[in-house]
Image 1 (cartoon, rainbow, N blue to C red):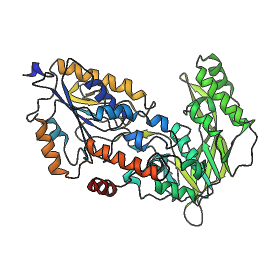
Image 2 (image 1 turned 120 degrees about the horizontal axis):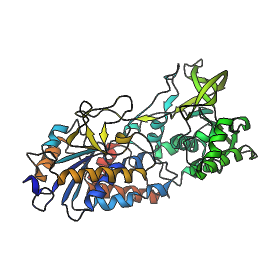
Image 3 (image 1 turned 180 degrees about the horizontal axis):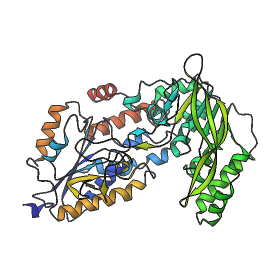
Image 4 (image 1 turned 60 degrees about the vertical axis):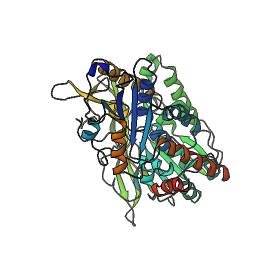
Length: 467
């Protein structure tokens, strides 16, 4: 019977855990096969699909979110089922998935942020940037978080795209944000914002900044905020200049040019000021009289080459930056998955081309796969997951053809459906999601916005009950 796996009578049964781009791209490649019959069930602990696209992409970047049109076609495929509001590991275990599927693929992302590891990091008004992003994007788990936007001076630690998003949202006017799908609770809070200065902090120079050219260029085009850089911090050191001169990366050269042009940009007297700092590292957050952050101690850095890579090190010079609110965006990492090996240092599941491997033997664990950030670490953009997902899906198909799969005792699709519904009667199917999507869009139209997000599980349940 194993040799018949993937036929009409014995389709390949696949469970994908996580409904972000990494998971959907795996599903896309599997479902486009014409010589293999595949049936996919996708699980997500949140009631709505699309993961990072819905809860990570900035609300003022609607073009990036258009990728959900591709995912929607997959969601409507008769060979695909979505089980939202179902927490794998809690509502259904990995062992139970093994009783119902030939293969299980985890596409759960990098769910936690890295810490700076400095004194004062846990003071009030010091937060992970991911919390703020999830809050303004309407993530149910972060709906009730509070950020003190009476603060006038904000520091964003990091110079990746997430850091840029946070800085840009803080620096934009409420009118600019009102035309987006930003969560309404966040929009109302940002309308009352007292933020006047936003400072981004990078430990290395402009040639090593992780943000993209499109992202950084936007910072110089904000309606309500002037941009500022310090000429001495964006003038490349000899080591960086030599590497840039030897590089054939025109995109990197353009990025440096964009940043250096900001040094000559005249301030227009806008109500807010956005400053990009380079070659500085926070070494301590300092508390004020109320116990919350009032300042940040910065160490100034220099660039040096070691092992063919450019690194930063402190010069011994220190400054104090007045700041009332801090968001750190210094990296992300995955969290362990019950039943699978985990590399604590890198924060990923050990794998080879997406096949989960046993650390002791380096051999694949039958039927277990990973895709996306939990596979490769937090790198790349949404589109990077397409190639990554295709790689994992290819390995899955190769293994299925070689009969290297799990041997489920209850492969009947009705069996897992009954089990999950008994555990989570309030699960959300893909047809349910299409109804929720229509509700959000209709409410948005009435408010003159692209959509009005449902941001709590109670709101989702109520909207579905209303039919």
